[in-house]
Length: 88
Image (cartoon, rainbow, N blue to C red; front, side):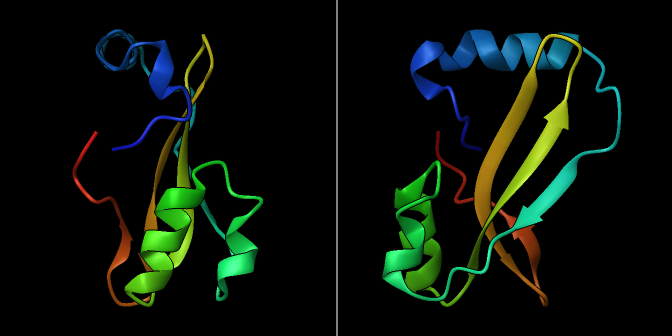
């Protein structure tokens, strides 16, 4: 799972996320990234490039908590759905 605010302290963010209840279901944003140049605008361009290398599209799953939104960054395909690389 990747946080948009990874530099703010990943363990504190994860603990806060676990203590809060999301206000709505998560929003899945799948971006039309098929070329390297299209990753320049991505929040996590490094993940976008990794997705391209394995033939998938960059995606964000956004959870809406009372304190702030929390973004997971990963890849998406029609067959597999949304997935992350499993490292923080």
